[in-house]
Length: 515
Image 1 (spheres, rainbow, N blue to C red):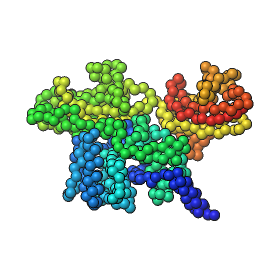
Image 2 (tube, rainbow, N blue to C red; image 1 turned 90 degrees about the horizontal axis):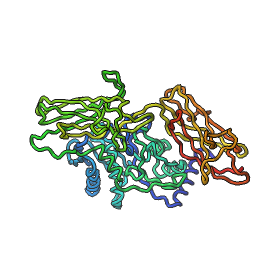
Image 3 (tube, rainbow, N blue to C red; image 1 turned 90 degrees about the vertical axis):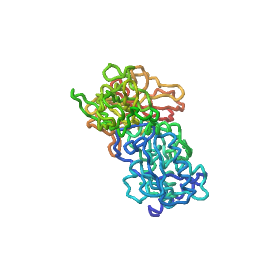
Image 4 (spheres, one colour; image 1 turned 120 degrees about the vertical axis):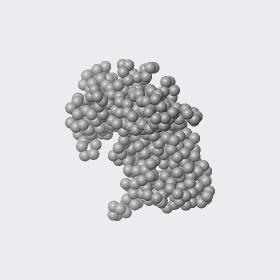
């Protein structure tokens, strides 16, 4: 039998197996962006592309290219649900130019361009498509599909491709299903299912309840931990979109009231101030009305991406209550003044976040004599200092008679020339750390462990990835000091050390052995 015939048979058999376990037809949208090497310097809850979000307060025009009135009414109904949590307005128009153009084509799947990418698509081409609505479509399916696609239109990405998601895919079954049911190629499955977004797209949090998450049947994972079909906005969806599109913190201004309206905020990284301190500039473009001749102040406030304000430690870049901030004074010379690229600088050292990789956000506020004039949306970024480790994991090989060989798999950044160590720590699942009795494979406090030192040769060094394998360590079964003649359930965990600093920790690896 030829290879392609065998492959077709295997795919058919796997799909039959999936059908026999009552797997329902899964409708998923097609990822319109390529996930590899996506540039980013931001982070937030879930995954999103902040550089493609609309300015807060925008009115985004939406037009239908076709579709029956009932389908159109459902799109209007559920798209507007986002507006309850985000400072953005979807204005549905019947003619003229539009930012988002919607098609109903059941031969093309469901998809949307990401955020402001819609403006790069020449009219009258569609920027969003709904690909499976029929007269029998349920209300739940209308809601979850429309919310999902308009999430993309506001800049959100697929949550299952969050770099911090721990989904142990059963890849053969996933390939089989999507090749057979969707007509996808293997590359399509890789791009839409298995590929991860840049680490910079996430603050380390993963939301399996997000409307942006694909449903994952238990049969698609090795540990049979599936994700249900999410049909409404999660609490974190609402929180994140409110930060990306914040509502004004001041009431609608009255005639003659001082008010600042933010147009845009950008971050310039790796810059230097006049004292040659390395840091970042926060640039703001904004209008301020009715503040002629008044000394105002622009202040940038820094927070962890999860919400908490950064605490100042030396009184140099701070608020009166001890939070990290940077500011600059300005005095409008017109009643209705516009400022372009007014900038506040903060040295990286003054963020006081320590070594490693930290997900942060910044918002800009405008003040006059204790009165808040206006505030920007949050801008997200990732700060890195010292050794950074990406995704520490391992491959394990068990020699039935002799011992265990462990190949750590990870990528190190910013560590060239330094000396570090990866160690594996062994535990009994039921009794805790294994005790050492001969000082051959042990920690300083007498627990069983094995490890090797490393010294990266490049700014970015990959260990045991692709064709480059060789960094490993080995421990004989006899050095686990187990009671003979019994079967033992054990586990080990890898830890990467920079001196006494714990840089990264792997998931536990479970196994059985008999000695």
